[in-house]
Length: 215
Ligand code: ADP
Ligand code: ADP
Image (cartoon, rainbow, N blue to C red; front, side, top):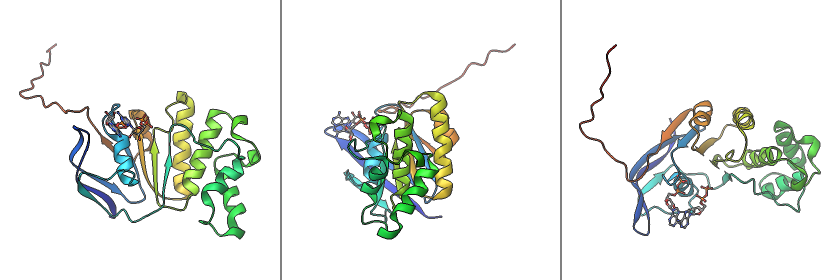
């Protein structure tokens, strides 16, 4: 099976090693969730995958696609552009001009925003804005989609709906998704596989015994 491979990656900021001889396989066209506490290196891994960061040593294999899209915690929409034009903005020159409107409509329909094409972000709820950010992330024609705690600010029932929505969008257009969260439930519901990162430095407890009380 084809996969993006992080091989023996070491990455430090100043004197702090965040990743040391780190290895990870990210299967092609599957959803890989990365969970871990704050500061464990989740965003660093995404930034290595998008090549915003370069590892100190080690290599990343099979990172063939030069179009990478990101969905962040804040939807990062352009406030002076309508829903439709926020989509257009990221697709310009990537989709044939005469197919663009239909293509955008297809993705807006998939996230139930087709009736809101002419709305501006400040007329929309947090959930609607994040649905638009998801549509935008999927519509960009690259294969690699990185999501950094996209639902952190949303309440639990809405987060659950968003997880279902990602599954539906992934069925419509399979992509390699790396989804960062600190919510284990989100990861369990969404991921084909889950990578768990620990707090640094990782403590190894030796001679651990567990007393199991009888009766
Ligand atoms: P996570 O996404 O799991 O919260 P990050 O990858 O953002 O973790 O960060 C891991 C650690 O590296 C944190 O302690 C963070 O403060 C630190 N860090 C991240 N980026 C930088 C940077 N550009 N310079 C210095 N330290 C950084
Ligand atoms: P998120 O919650 O989306 O992961 P963060 O607030 O952790 O965002 O980090 C935002 C950006 O700031 C990241 O690109 C990260 O690399 C950088 N960063 C995080 N911690 C530090 C730090 N201690 N020094 C410098 N840059 C940092």
